[in-house]
Length: 142
Image (cartoon, rainbow, N blue to C red; front, side, top):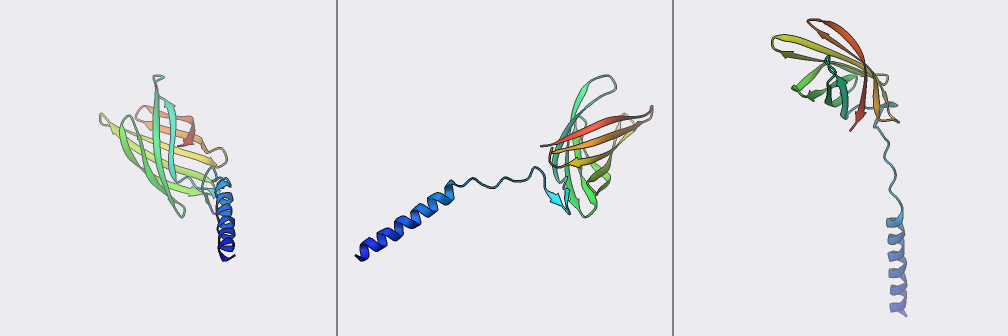
């Protein structure tokens, strides 16, 4: 009798474990949340058109601490740290300065994180020695 009771308990426990393993895992949100806003921490990519129509892919890695946004952007000209980075009310702003052939170029990015879509949409203002241009900017979470 005792053996049957032990066997019944073992079967009950085994079936409980099997049912628990069959449950689907809870879905993770598309983007992390910080104080109710999407957290841009992580890796993002985007493509931009050069002045001669060429397409270039950029990859940024961001980290948020309070209102401060830090990280770097890499692309065809290597990696560069971001400066003036901030994240407040779901909005990111940062700048990337590079130098090529003695010419300094600064790109200033500003955009709103759309957590559900996994994108940042905004503008990029590019300043070079030959002027400044503003273009739409859309980065996708990688």
